[in-house]
Image 1 (cartoon, rainbow, N blue to C red):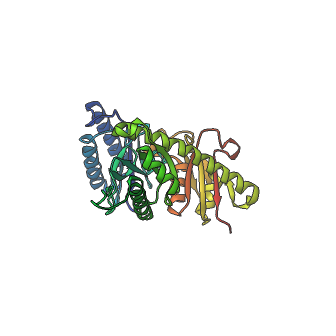
Image 2 (image 1 turned 90 degrees about the horizontal axis):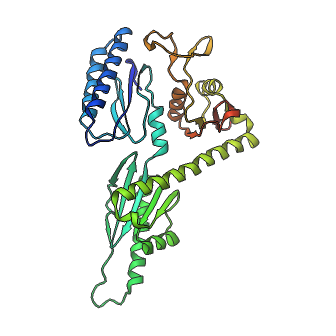
Image 3 (image 1 turned 120 degrees about the horizontal axis):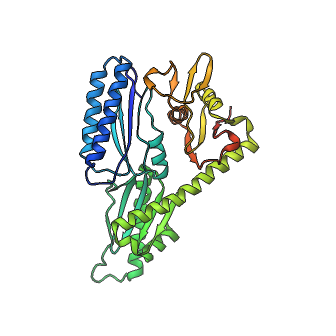
Length: 346
């Protein structure tokens, strides 16, 4: 978060390309101009320096590969640009905090995860996030299947078993440094042996042993499908934990965005926040309480204490205080007024 300066968020849906299309780049410049207009209307001190950072981010995005969306965040302490694998609604938000919900939702759908590929005589471990797949920096990977020394009596099974054991031990070391869900892919025999004997496969999100493992692009797409199935399971897990709290510890459950906001801002420690995917709640928060705004026609003229989306700011608060955030399909939390917070026991 920015401290003295406001935080500027720009969101834009884009066409996937090796370099941002001319049309998308023009739309991005229009959004930067809108941010400049809002900053001028607010008479923001330091607006010139902030706009310089924002234009640099926009120039970087305009000359970089694009996915289905892009997010720019510019503030006093943060200047970041993210390529998104999910579309977003074009928007400019100038507030005290960044609008991070779209980025969080993207990371929720394609969170950082590991992909272990065992093909031929090699094993490689990748770190994947959003639409990016890179080898994980590790002294253990890539790992080569040991070739039997002349005169040794080990057969093929013994050599493969030793290889699988070494991969499993190395995987354990890597996962302690990089905890994340994992997908295992590759040739059927080493993969199946690892699944039977591996001790470091907690949070296993999927297994791939079909023809897609030979094509990097097909493998990436198949791994993403496996991850989506895993995340549907995680959504069910979050809802199960919610119902468990409702039955056994009702004092830890708070429903509705207003009550959840009040609970967290008053110092309660959040354990888990579950919100519906598309629920937004523009509001004013002041000494009189929380009042919903039907629409912010002119954000720069909004009353003091305005939040373009109180749910987005609630998500930030929960994450800042160590809580877990999960998104649920629309209407799954209808009886909870679309937001449910579970706090730690008093």
